[in-house]
Length: 205
Image 1 (cartoon, rainbow, N blue to C red):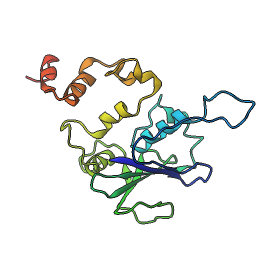
Image 2 (image 1 turned 45 degrees about the vertical axis):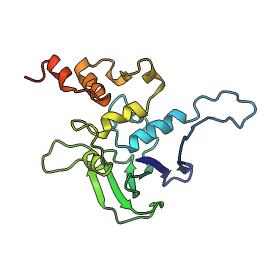
Image 3 (image 1 turned 90 degrees about the horizontal axis):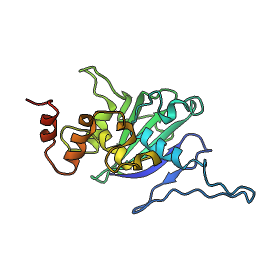
Image 4 (image 1 turned 60 degrees about the vertical axis):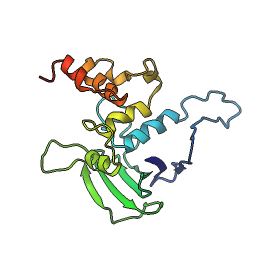
């Protein structure tokens, strides 16, 4: 899977098309009287990509305090799947717990699209009768590398903030968590049997 394009129904947001290979986000100051390349939106874009990959908007997260700013915005993230198809995720700040998805065999903008393969999907749910959006996206991504974990567990290791680089393996969000919350996952990601750690922590007989 790779990011293909990111765009919005608001023309003030510049459409972004991701190229093959390395993509670099950098800040450039046009005003000669300003020489500070900070606070230009680089980190916000990274947070937006994470949001479009179905991150929950919980208290304390970046967009929790920005919901009013983006309340009228709807964003679209197009992903190129390993199959060669293109999956578009539509998510609006007017209802951050619901998303729509559509798969096509070609790349295109879907601003005016009214027919979606999945509509009004619940982001996460405990109901046995409702399939959450994250589970559907996990299936579409064909993420089967780690059987006991879905793609969301891995996203944080690709989309890191500055505070996530103080430790190679432990992300900031795990800084107050016990080891068994994150170490078995990393252990398995590195090719080892995570059951060994789970047994150590007393979670398996």
